[in-house]
Image (cartoon, helix red, strand yellow):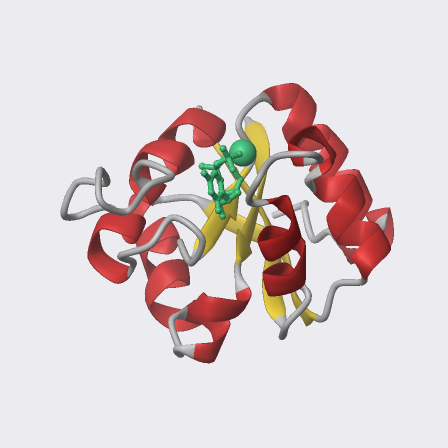
Length: 140
Ligand code: CDP
Ligand code: MG
């Protein structure tokens, strides 16, 4: 079993997409083991997106990510890191296939509704950044 960190970004929360997005991962057979609505601090967003510092879109990205609540989650399932990224679709919604989350709900790169970890290392790092161990519900 693998774990990943997924986060509905402020645009997704604002647009009322939490339920529809969560439903897709539930329908796929994955299990949510932690979830919370939260407003992220500048410090947290900088740690989360540290790899992007210095890129032309970085300022917009960090401002946007702290502009309203996000819905942060940990999900569990077989091959979930790769499969969740597949369900999310390409980073650029113009290239994301219909049927994917970004393909169905987004039109712009900088308002692409959802984040998902891209590797086991980043999944562990991001889970630890956003959640305390006591917040995980894992034995069932
Ligand atoms: O989110 P994902 O892992 O698919 O893409 P990324 O390359 O790790 O970029 C992180 C986030 O930065 C994206 O989801 C976009 O919100 C934002 N971004 C952007 O606004 N413009 C770009 N040219 C690249 C990324
Ligand atoms: Mg990424």
